[in-house]
Image (cartoon, rainbow, N blue to C red):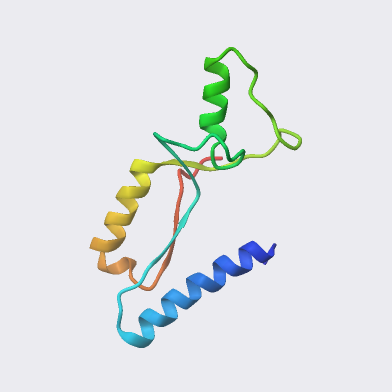
Length: 106
């Protein structure tokens, strides 16, 4: 895996699914991509990038670009994330799986 962060995320997913299997608990792991929506924190330059850009532009300022500006990220609206959580709870075929929750566009 590419980083300690990725390794710990993977280990957590596996632990949830193994626990579910061992104890007969319905479990699913959802991998959320970059969630955005109302109330987005401006203080985090990565998770709040859309809110940060919008706020700066609305105030006549240029958006702050980090690193080389060539990064691509998959953003997903919080309503779509909520829907994904609901579907994961309702759809039996989701159980025991890891599911990516994103827009599919970067």
